Length: 389
Length: 157
Image (cartoon, rainbow over all chains, first blue to last red; front, side):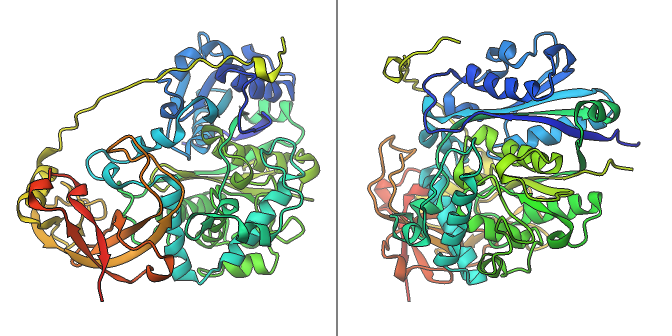
């Protein structure tokens, strides 16, 4: 069976922030949708189906698909709700792609949103743990990531200074992105290293913020895509991979990321990527902590295993480097969880479409986007200016 | 769109208390009985020799049933470790666990996988990948059949 060529043709985001007390969840989601559809003058009756992602336990609304039908413009249409943890936004994008590529739908709206200020993220995240085996001794997302970082440091030799450089890069990039939550134009590596430890070796400024925000995309089939966007961001790969079920199952967690490696192997094969560092012009990857970006670059084959520290020391992933990573500022600069991985895909699409504004990388032909979350699950997409043959 | 001053924003506060009762099932029941009654840690093994802790019906790596029970630990090594300084709500009590506390991934001797658990040590300089640790059990009369029957892990030589 031949896949129908599909492309992202429009994106929209809210200005991500600690607390959006001026809007309800539905109003916030709609804000991103209006920007997305408005970018191409699309009307709701041109949308065939809707895919929505949200971490429903964070806000305590089980049927966000029901209570958001009107805001999502989904009345009388298929509306699919997903929750795959922090991965979910990228899962939304992958699902949108499959729905179009299957030939069943022509134009799909994908939405991700999270209003952490409405809810109890810290309490709700305990429900991510297995009730029988994991909850009795959990330490939250930060304790989990810090433990993973310790393994990564042991395996790769990466230093706190190298991680701090990633934290600074993200926040300086974010200053050019009007939708990023954190704008810290004066941040320095000294500030990162002097910020208090949340959990050793993770300093406060090594970690992502907690954000309210929403993101939307439109995925369209072949001729629609070409009609709607001057340079559609064509999907050349959409890959998903899971790890084993318990958090301790993966032997080296952040150092050897099994699901990321599996998704990259599949996605690179689909898109014909043989040398990620040279084949991609930009990458938007899901780094909830500074260390994660370096580990993920290694596991994505952007550099050799253990080479993450070198990558940042040599400036290769800076905005003016050969492969800018997270020109948007990344997760380190905004983390509205249900939207976060969709933001990675949307930002990669903006780069390919040439519409990323002040954080546009020159001459982008091919972009990588990843989502990571749940218990070490990965979604990965490759977007390109070239229509798939 | 109407607008209003930030101090006029209305927030509707709700507190939802949900209660759950999880049936532990065959594998966990056997595991927790051994932990509670005998202070022994059991894992499951498949025909290829994969040893999984927590025990489980099927090995994710081989796809084979895990029919054989083996004892692992109570000593092991740290596969990852941290000291947590930011408060976190203890799911077992609903109140914040006092900080700082040690937290690590423990690979029991004889097991191929790790479990997260608390560490007695709270000096980051003393913990790290490869350090040897040992489970410290609660007294028999305090054990209820939970991973928290292991109070924490302590460093050994």
